[in-house]
Length: 134
Image (tube, rainbow, N blue to C red; front, side, top):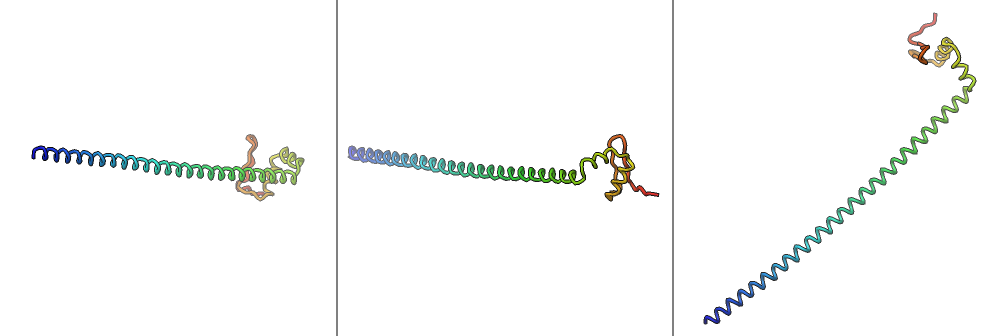
């Protein structure tokens, strides 16, 4: 009976040991699979974030290029406008205006309809503030 009970205890202990070994191995495999799944999710999230940021950078570059193109086009238009005004007035007329005295400059500016206006070249100010001819 002692042998039988010792044999039964040994068999039960051996069975419990084997069951715990199997259970431990299963838990290790489960933890490994969970870690692999987390790693795959993290890599996917990282890749998605990277692609999103690359798309945002490309979009911003496109906007910047459009803004630069617009600024260049506007500056070309302004330069063309200024050139056409200078061509219409004529270089000789501009030269004569710049060499004319303050009285003639005042009359030219008044002819443009400007009121309450001050122009100066640093030495000869031209004042049109509430100027009334007598």
